[in-house]
Amino acid sequence: MRHPSLIPAPLLPVVLLLVCQVARSFLLEGSATSYAQFRKWNAGLNGTLEFEFKTEQGNGLLLYTDDGGTYDFFEVKLVESALRLRYNLGGGAQIVTVGHDLGDGHWHKVQITRCNENTTLTVDGVGAVSTSRGKEFEFGKLAGNSDVYVGGMPSWYNSKLTLLALPSVIFEPRFNGFIRNLVYADGENTMPRRQEMKSRDAKVRKYFGMRCYKKICSSKSPNAILDLNCRSSCKCFVTVINDQTFEDLSEIT
Ligand SMILES: *[C@@H]1O[C@H](CO)[C@@H](O)[C@H](O)[C@H]1NC(C)=O
Ligand SMILES: *[C@@H]1O[C@H](CO)[C@@H](O)[C@H](O)[C@H]1NC(C)=O
Image (tube, rainbow, N blue to C red; front, side, top):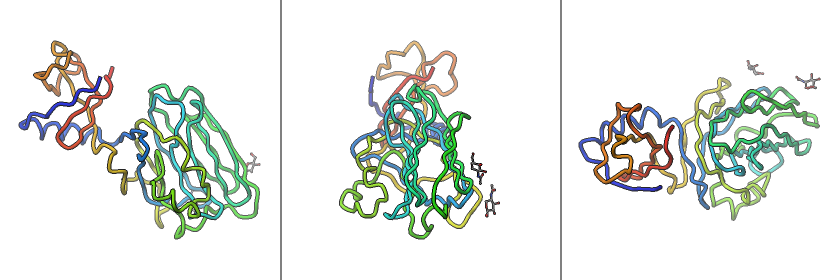
């Protein structure tokens, strides 16, 4: 299916405009090193965190953040196409699982909602509550907490396992798919906001967007026409851009 080809230079500005409109999602390829890194989550006692994902695989690490290596962590992953939250706020690890068939290639919305000792995991509006034991329910100390990692962990953690509250996280399969709309409060803010990526594995593709071909050229021959106003008469593909090279990943239907 993959078919790299060069962008005709005159079309580049148009293409980038289009890409900007849909660049709110990003692709993690699930390779041995892929991950994306975001600001610390100021979880507070009543914080929320949400994001959407789309994948065709039933297993993979979606999100991880911890207190820098003591006890507290939040780990969200797909396990056999169900969504699983494992977390610890100091009183012992808790597990809560929701949903099924989540590796079906459609978008799914995840929400984690804290309310003191109770933490609710929700997928597509269906939630389950878990109650922590212990005396206090703060998530670590903001200053010492880790950033939020999505899709995998940076490989430098492999030699710094003591910095992980849940060292096994580095062995989790990496997430292969799309993520968008990661929203939570960060820093000293208590108002949730959409998070921008801080950094990512260099091999993760920079942008993706949509590329359309006239149906007559649906074989994607080298002289296929890139037409941005032809959704009904074209075949459109999710497209990754590596510098100057396009790669069509999957057809949008
Ligand atoms: C969460 O708690 C903080 C301080 O305890 C408060 O300022 C904020 O309004 C609360 N947010 C919600 C959504 O209840
Ligand atoms: C936590 O959940 C339990 C059981 O659902 C409920 O009785 C309790 O009031 C909840 N606590 C808070 C702070 O919402």
